[in-house]
Length: 442
Image (cartoon, rainbow, N blue to C red; front, side, top):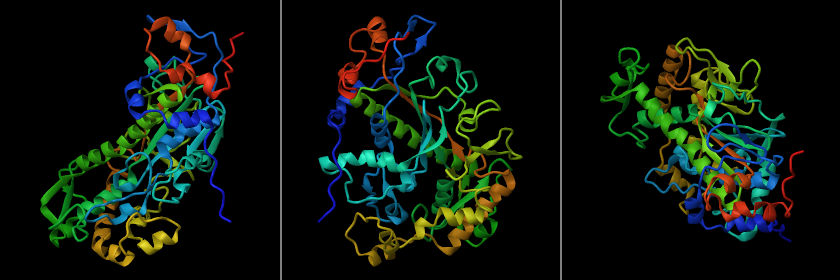
């Protein structure tokens, strides 16, 4: 007898799943005023007369799934699909399929991380049938790990939170989502693709010649590779431009995750918005009186500010102190790229194509030994010269947060014209909380 299918979702979550896409897109707004809040200044002064109500597990699971759930195998239908096939699909697009955006969140009960890499694929479209929808609850229960008790104590003063957001950020009843981005793994993989013309994915007829534009355009530890012709003298690439290109692309992943969550908010009738207006160093590492997300920082000789490198055992960059040196970090970062399709399937993963494994592996050169050593030389130069990796951007970055909360509709009725919120917001407590309305303040 086969295992029973996972149960479907409760009716209110099914209705949210079936909510029209374009209604969610066109109905998306930043809706900031939640239950229990007070806006003491400006033209919209208002004090909520209701107690804050935090999101329950099902509401949180729906938002988490919209950003990070497993969707199936990545198709990677290109001439040289390479290592991209050997990754797990997510709702948001990711450079080279790395998915090095890790979602953290905090609410009244604790600080959490979504370890989405724990999930495995089971079929081409993970949510193909209606009964599959119940998997979002299992994903939440399996992949969300509690890190700390109690709400993250982000200080409501600058530079932790800029003044215009202090009245609303991280208040009781809110859930604050934080997509934290590691750029080190993709930096290593990008340099490999740019320099290894033998693999031919990003470069042909000689790899790119990366130079240190902060130090007189000198070679980045790659002189011998230029002299041998492995790298082309004609393809000069300044290191700071490379790192900016990388960082811009990687940080977009957090924005994609945030947009998906805000669309899910329209479908579920949850309020909130995506925003900046905070110091990432304070949020990630805290202050002497505030723990933040508890990330480790290192001090490099080339940067006056401490540099976030990871939270031990939770989310760690591919650089020291989590690796002995950059050679070890490179080996760890490219491990999956050199895996055979037989090895990938041996891990219980799915491949999206019908090509024979041997044929696929023969047609996709992952990396040459010369390319790997060239990358190790470049990455070692960066660490030795700047005392950190990468050289000009932080290894771990956070630029956006997404806050979710239950709206106080009285505020919008008092201060905004009709249409400021959707029918899903109007009927949220009827549909999601059994008609039990928020309690009045004492």
